[in-house]
Image (cartoon, rainbow, N blue to C red; front, side):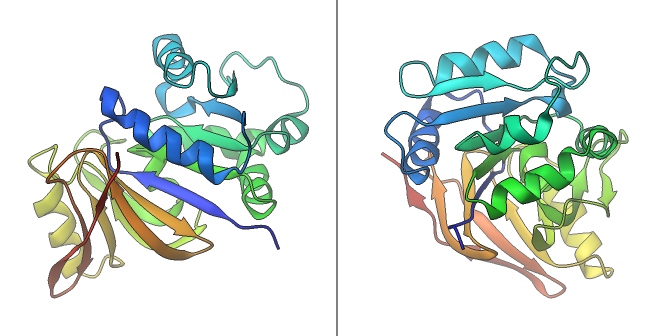
Length: 225
């Protein structure tokens, strides 16, 4: 079986220092010039965000994007399986999941992951891989119960970036929501298969946390350079 990598980041995608995470994503593909696809469904295929993605990977990857609101690709399976990495945008997680399911992208992403395509993303691109998470997709912060489920448990991004994230997540878990992992902006959780292999950060002082009914435990992060 191919190695299966997921890098789920808490936020901070527009920070130029995030380029160190992009280097890690590219390195995990094992390719000198990998094919990296941007999937901006959660951002409603925002062209500005797509241009920022192209700028970030300029000169070190063969980049492409997949729009589903103005769909141009007929064979989604062949297109996504031909990539070495897929990067999921932030935005509205619930909307992204719904659109992916209509187009069958949810099943294709699982097949791609199992075939060794590196999956990554921040914010919505963090939550989507888990069974459930904390989202503002519906306005106020609320639980989302129908993630892709590649990774067990729950997730919460922007743990230090939005003042209500930490109290909302800890309260939900204390009340019976599945326990899981939280990440500050500038922090990514690196899963090899379904096991958390490492936590990396491109922002000094930022961290990640394991959150259970009894509270949270700080997890050590490696600062990317």
